[in-house]
Amino acid sequence: MLRSQFEEQLSDLHHQFYEMGTEVSESIHKSVRSFIEHNRTLAQEVINYDPTINEKEIELEKRSFELIALQQPMAGDLRMIITVMKASSDLERMGDHSVSIAKATINLKGETRIPQVEEAIDYMSLKVQKMVDNVLKAYVKQDATRARKVADTDEEVNKLGARIHDQAIASMQEDPETIIAGNDYIKVSSYLERIADYVTNIAEWIVYLETGKITELSTANEEVTPENE
Image (cartoon, rainbow, N blue to C red):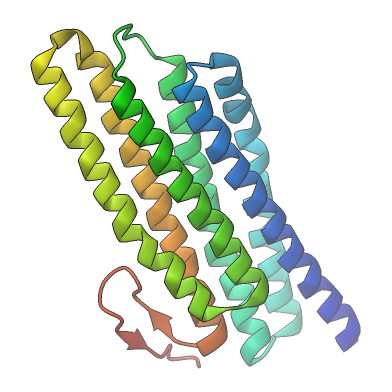
């Protein structure tokens, strides 16, 4: 196969990954909005679309393996394909957590809500969505510096999750009528934390794409050069 054809296939892989990322970002947005607004119809939309996201991840993996098997790409091209394979798996898991939030909306039973906690969840979700959008921008530009900055936000999201947990527990202790809602809030904030963790994983793969080094951005920045590099 000519080099130009390979580059075209690589470009298609790149665009399909970005498209999947924007769809996952939209699912996150819809799932949280459905939860805050108690909108079961919107939640069902998220659940119904999840198989499409799963199919996109499978297709990206398939095409990645085909490119590796048929082309035996070198250096930067191989890193691009590996990044897409690994990061698309993270996107798929982010989509799964969006579905979990949507299911929490549909299963919502508690009538007594805690407005200040819902506001905190809304704010937390905006932080997470911004992480998703920024990591996609970093991917498009292959910008490791921006990717590292995105990962830095993960700690802030974790703190917001801890604050929501504490607020929900305090409300449940004060008013037993909020126990069901409080448990829902704790679960949803934990889903958002996990989404942020997967965004950090993608940021790590972007750093790998640029540098060829696997970097743990969520802890100490210890770098390891893969054996095949």
